[in-house]
Each structure stands twice: as structure tokens, then as C-alpha cells.
Image 1 (cartoon, rainbow, N blue to C red):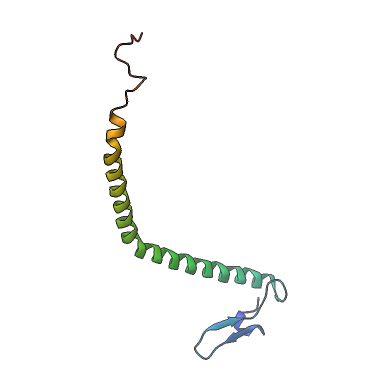
Image 2: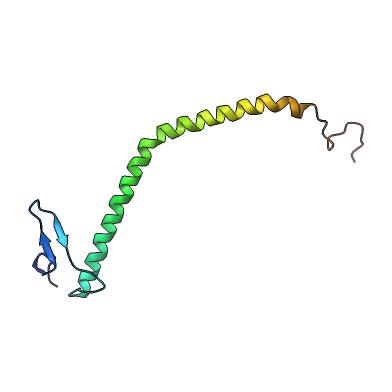
Amino acid sequence: MIQCKDCEYYKESENGQRIFECDPFKNIKEPECLMKWQLLRLDLLLTHQQALLASQRKMAPMQDKIFRYIKRELDDIEDADRWKIEDIPDPYNDPEEDVF
């Protein structure tokens, strides 16, 4: 198995960043190259997922405040409309009707 640093599709930039010019659909040298490429993609996916989680953690306190505010507003609306519902008799709860 060849190492990536010995491959012709591998380059390194001046700042030490690794550049892989290999494409698993066109030019891989060995089956192990495909497994390495999959590991690199999984690592990239994990990095993006962690960044998304970090941004969600930043937003969580603000979202909690918004949810509390909306709940309070909905409760106020419900309290304001309660008088409409209390005057209507419940047809299923008639005290004059005998229930066996």
C-alpha cells in the first residue's frame, strides 16, 4: 500500500495544508485509496456537523426566550377569549339527563 504523501495526486501547500487531487471516480491507484478517501469525507462531514451543533448551542438561549414569549402571548390570547367559551353550555354534560 502506498502512502498518500508518495502519491502523484498528493500535494502540500506552503502553509502545510494537504491537497488531494485524486478522484475516486477517475484516478485511484489502489483499493486502499478509496477507503482513505471515504475516511477523509467522513471527517469533513463530522467537522460540518460539529460546526452546526456549535451554532445551535449559541442559538439555544435565544430560542428559549422566543418560545417563552410566544407561549406567554398564546396564554394571554387564550385568557382573553375564555369568556366566549365559558358561556356556552356543554351538550355532553347535561345535569338534567340521567346517565346509566
